[in-house]
Length: 152
Image 1 (cartoon, rainbow, N blue to C red):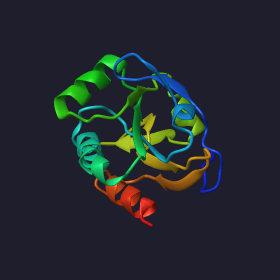
Image 2 (cartoon, helix red, strand yellow):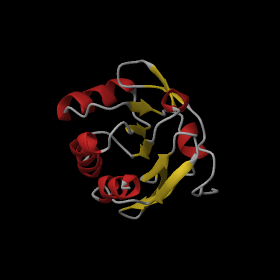
Image 3 (cartoon, rainbow, N blue to C red):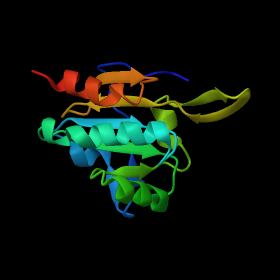
């Protein structure tokens, strides 16, 4: 699957958030937005990543954070409620958006091979272009990379 690079236009999307509202990347035009993909809500790595991003929301100015996983909106809502995340969690149930970003791929766990989300993050600038691209990012590095990319 082709990977995106800094300078590429960010693939647009419209998905339902944890409250059942339609959310599009276009809604964030004019400001930076971190779009990050995670495998499954309320699992240890995904919780570390989401809570780390929640904890820096006050340090990123008017930039936004959007999380995307294949989970249904109801599961995303439970995840948000449990950890008071405070940013949109979008349901990419058919993984079409993940495929557009090159993050749906083959994974291996305990000798089993399957298709799933490759944890990745993308910083989209106000014009809709990729200003940061991090494939296979660790949960703990996601907030650090975002802060470094937004630093003057």
